[in-house]
Image (cartoon, rainbow, N blue to C red; front, side, top):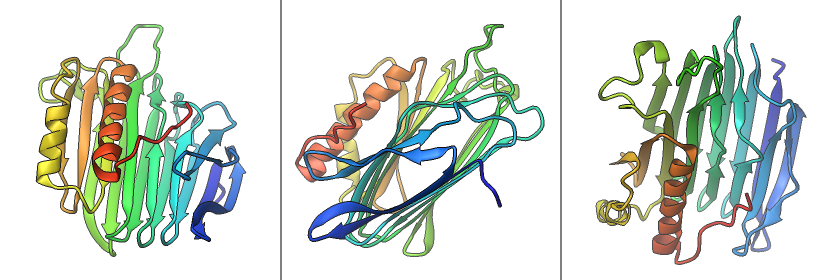
Length: 269
């Protein structure tokens, strides 16, 4: 199958240091040269040189993090999905984490414009000793008619397999014709953020501490759930991207301070 954008990336540990050991990309996908954070974490930006996702596009990304290696990945800009009158945009993502590895993914928002249809499936295969962090934000694109939800469909599935067993299955499905403004759906909000964090040290007590830490945020609605494995999932509803990003930053700072005893990753964005 020929993809509109194809990317494979690998991080390994060499002489006690995490490095990008292999990279291959084709089509509209490219990556930046890795830079290193103060903690020695290689940081890579994913780049889409096509300007946006359009009718019938297909994308594939696979990132492998080998034993004892660490990697941070972010995007260069928002992902813009334009109208798809004939066929939806499809994107498949695979993350593989070996023993004692860490993968941190911080993505810019997905912006879905009028008549856009976007289907994404993310599969995570990880050892139970590995650490996984992922953020995702969905926002409506501008519409000249002033519609709050001009897109047709956004579907995002996240499946996490730990030691070959399916442990997490999440499906975010936004279909405006179902009236996303109604009670118990988005409740008048326009933007939705998701954050997944899987770490052996996550406990009920830790989540309660985080809830208390977030108690001052009254401009957003959020919920947090403990997963079937040591980890949690956050869902945040707001009216602006900046509000979700602010909460994500506070959560990330709390994670690194309480679990790693260090500062949050300097994403340089």
